[in-house]
Length: 244
Image (cartoon, rainbow, N blue to C red; front, side, top):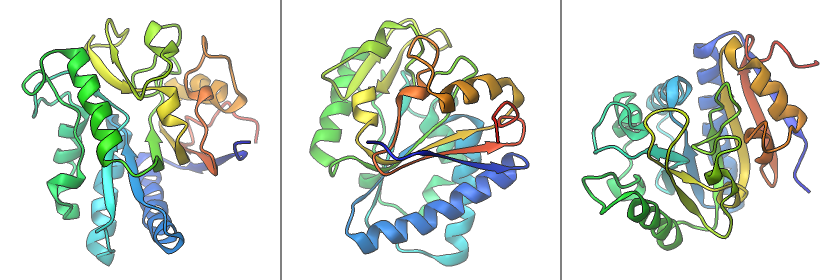
């Protein structure tokens, strides 16, 4: 059975990102001590960028050993490398390179400049997970949209129902751009810990639905839990509808 859901609330985005970065640094040490591979799934958006910037700052302060860390993305927009709307471009702009990881440890989703089409990009990313992944994510970070989507699995969208697959090619995304590559629920479920990173009052209903376990047609976030721990990292506005 998945572990109970935990809630962490900070006053604003900056404080929240700092807390997540500090928790990530501590968790990597714990995983290393336990002999678990440090496969980390990153998210995009404003919280993803803020968290990356805070992690870079924390790393500069302590110079922790990241030699066993590998980075992945829960989803990606099917756009050329370097496009400002790509999640990995936003992470780059937030200072990812300053973590000092070799490029071989940063697993990017192919775009139209390095794949034949969207289906090929999804297949290539799945193949990389199979060949270079080490048994699942130690921590998978996910943002949550106001509609309850996580990665690019939107409630009620056909891609949400994908089974027997690691990745899915998402056509006709309700949120632009329309073509994306996403992890499936089955891939996300192979996570030791799942961390939701959410800020803003416009997402308060989605947070409540996710925490309370709404059905798939209402909330994709409610369908994802870590095998050991699930944590919702929230600012005060995002947490405003929770019963605490």
